[in-house]
Image (tube, rainbow, N blue to C red):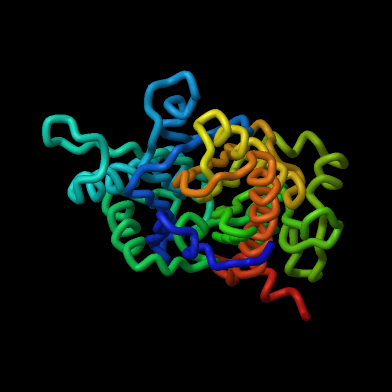
Length: 322
């Protein structure tokens, strides 16, 4: 197994658009030929679009895009721009010369950073599609990660900056990648370790605190301080799997969240993972799932380590002296 670039997975195009001044943005993953897809929503407070149709019992078998967005539920508007872009390019289901693409979405809450009234709109979704044509995606303070932050248990003054990350792996002809925007209440760690990347940080004393420990010490503060969360992501692959299997891949990929984010999947999170495949390469489901977990782990690490300090939030780059 080797590491590859995310844009080496054929059939997918990734692009972002962002409002840097107001700290919000969106990221789109296009599959113009149509992708077999699944989803797993683990958080208790999701803001999502078109997740029900990914249930294997429902009719639609292919989707054409996944949008990851800031703006909480307001950010769902960005998918209207993705719909417009795809329909203009005659991508989607041809219904008497009206092309209807299927666009799924999940949003994170970044309204506590930058301008609380700014959110990704229809134009931003369209612009992200235009950027996806270049298929040269960037990580860090871009797209859905523009206003992302972590370690928010004591409020934004103790939070740290996170962002958008991705990673991809290849074994033989099989390719699996992960894209993620990390906006957790908790902390980011290197996988299966106690080595922190980003979380609660006291600028005055240059001290790191750990969210799980602080929550256990002062559980009542969770009600007031832990409501601006959500990690949203998407697995992309060329594995030839069906709709039910892709739902299982999305489910397995949440192990990547659990290995790197503490706490995760809380009642006020909207933690969601989509999974999309171009169905090009015969593959064993569990192998794809294991690779998806590994890719998601590294994508989360990248989301934490590649973000820049912004909006009064310190970053891993700023406080880590390697």
